Image (cartoon, rainbow, N blue to C red; front, side, top):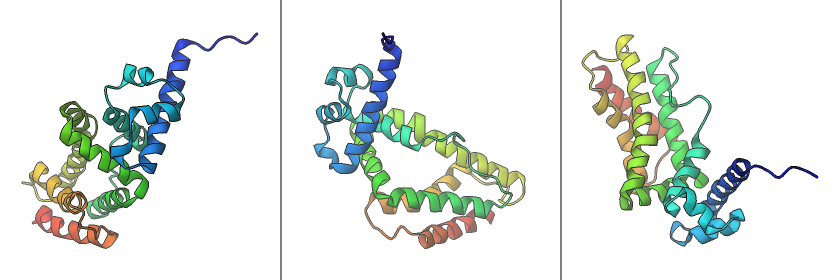
Length: 195
C-alpha cells in the first residue's frame, strides 16, 4: 500500500494549484469577476484552504504574479559595461511586459489592489517595487563609478526619469508603448544622466 502523502506535500500541491488557478483565471476573466470561489473551484480546493494562506483574492493574485515573474537570477540588472545598452534592455523589457496581454492582466489587477488594500500595497512595495528600484539604482551607481554617468547623479531621480514615462503611459492607458518609445524615453533620460 502506497504511503499517504505528508501534510506538507499536500499543502505545497494545493498552494501550487491555487496559484496556477489564479494565473489562469486572471487571464480569462475581468478582475472584478474573479473571486476566491472561482479560484478554489479551478484549483480543486475549498475556500478555507485559500484563506488559510491569503486574506483576499488580491493577495492570491499578487503571489501568483510574483511566482510567474520570479527567476533564478534574482533582481539584478546586467552590467555589460555599456550603460545605454543595459538600460535599453531594461526599458524594452518593461514595455514588453506591460504590453503582454497575459502579464498585463496581472499588472492591472495588482494596480487596483495596491490602491485599495494597504497591506497589499505595502507588500508590493516591499517585495517587488523597492527591490526593482534598488537593482536599477545599483546599476546606475556602477555607471557613475565607471564614468559613464555623471558623478553627482541623484539615483532616485534618475530611476524616476527612466521608469516614469513608460509607467505613466501604461497606467493612463495612453498606448504607444513600443520599443521605439522606450528608446526615445531612454535617450531623453540619458541626456540628464550624462550631463
